[in-house]
Image: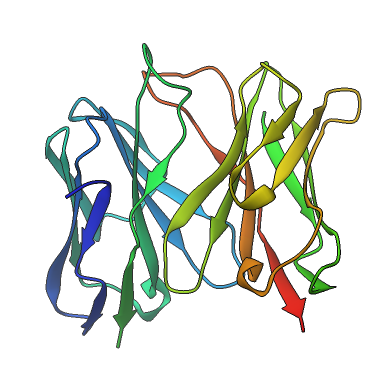
Length: 115
Length: 116
């Protein structure tokens, strides 16, 4: 398997549920990203990890909790979400400093609906 | 600070006609520039990138873009539109990596419609 894989592709949850999104990359990259894509809004960077260390948290509410156990895996833990959190959540990876020209490789996204 | 402006949130062209999607950027450092395409219910795929080599960049599916520093533009073109080009297109800019990673700034996207 190659590229960036996200699971699940679709998720429906209530406001009191706890769920997680998973991202896995098989490209040997060291940086991983979570983006939120809402209708009629620009892509919003949420979190960046480099070699498992969080390097950016773009003022994301605490009901979103990222986890990066290694350079190949990234999770987004979700709890007590709001309906406005319904969106497409995209995971991406890239080579950071020392290699490549930094283009992002995206997964196909997890479509989240909060009821 | 870096920013990206995509003129026109929706563009319609006839099949076989020229495609022109506009992107202007601002950057305080030499930029890397990218065009990504997103088909329905999919993630973003890289179309092409400018990384300070040739100013005319060729990408997949006959798309190309020209970096014009004097105009701070990186417009995307394709000589002849195909129905399969219908998608949303995003321009993005990034500069020198910080904290070991690139900080991307994306435009708001242009949805391309191809008319039969």
